[in-house]
Image (tube, rainbow, N blue to C red; front, side, top):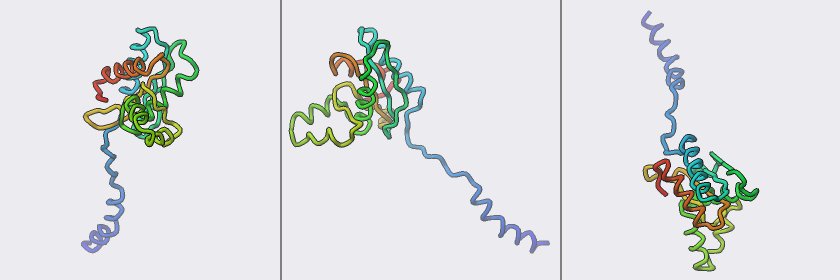
Length: 163
């Protein structure tokens, strides 16, 4: 009887070990609910200034989580906002600051060609939660990058994120 129990324990123990679930990754991420709140707040901030914009929020890996096209926003605004959000997430920097960095030294111009999805103009901000870079927000459609960036900042503030 003892031999049978020992035999079963030895045979079944690898199966028991293999059946244990693996731990899920614990890296910070941007939940869809927060991405949606940030995008809505940014659209509303621009609408309050009579600006018809689109807002995109991307995850850290650059995948689009939310894309909102405001009423009467131009057809180009969706792709512009996605490109700005992607650039902010990929580079971890304000896209206006990146544009200034590039224009300050022609040797930096190659940064514009790092990835065809990037739009390096004002209006894209990185999203940090608890100090960790978790994504980017981009606004496109206002007449200046400064207005786009102010609306993007309103989105960050709505969710308590840092840029």
